[in-house]
Image (tube, rainbow, N blue to C red; front, side, top):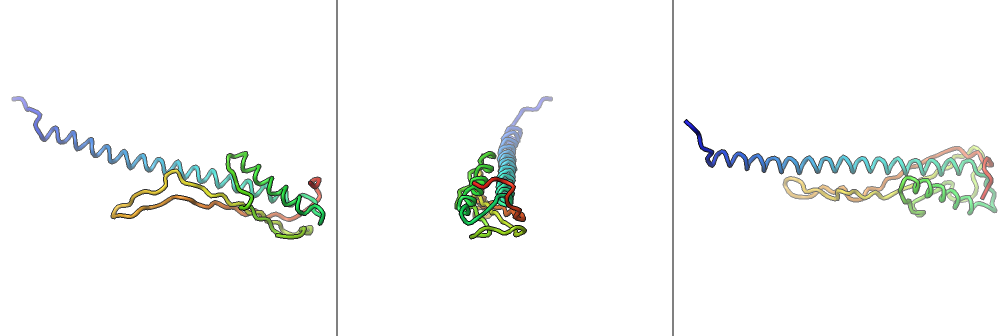
Amino acid sequence: MSRKAGPIAGGARGQNLVEFAISLTVLLLLLAAIADLGRAFYTYVAVANAAREGARYYSRMSCVASNEAALRAAVADTVVNEALASGITIPRNRITLEPSSGCPTQGQPVRVEAVYTFTSMIGSVPMLGGGRFSFGVIPLGHVATMVYQGSDVVSP
């Protein structure tokens, strides 16, 4: 006795295809989220390295009243160039130096803060029950503090 493939067998194949399509969509979204998280972590490390390099440079340059503006510009250049080496562009207006005015004294902490605006490649994801979960734009920043030593490097 032979069996014929009826509507139940064909429906099962269609159901499998629909389940596969739904599962594949969820898995691809999860994979994209993991890749985006990796990008965010890479970006944060690049921002942290740039701020740390700026603080290191700031802590080792001699500062006198006549070269204070040049010193601040050189520190900002150091942060921007270190970030560019990793493919990140940190705008100068997102770099903060402390002390905010005047030259630091030997033994005083110097602080460099760099902030980069990270844009997620995922954007937003619809949630069950309505609404959206937005990854969107995330500010990634790092503050590096070092003790001012001065005069190891020739001033700009």
